[in-house]
Image (cartoon, rainbow, N blue to C red; front, side, top):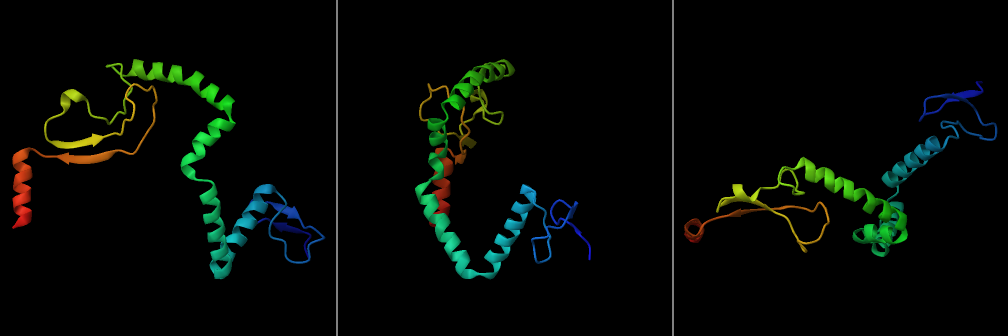
Length: 161
């Protein structure tokens, strides 16, 4: 009988642990032990519906006490050094953006420029709560289609018939 085994995660040959009675498949490295635990968890969730339900309920309870939308603000409150460093770095980032944009505006590259807008067509609208704020935040865009008066009347007449 061999005194070594090949770890299923790192694929390196290791000496067996003499205290383990069964077949050893993972070494004692932290990443390998985490892989072993993850494998056990996946198999347990597949085979045991009671465990799966308890796990789902536990996660739901945790998420009600730790809402994801408040994560960033809570992180900023508990990490003031992060905020200071970010503020210090934001100035050079803004300067770089201003220099790279010919109009001197900080905009997304796919945002429409006002001179190119026509009265009708597809537009991308970005929510803007405070236009004077110096925040650069990516938000979800809303795509809408704007139609002129005659086209709207024509659409309504077609829908009603």
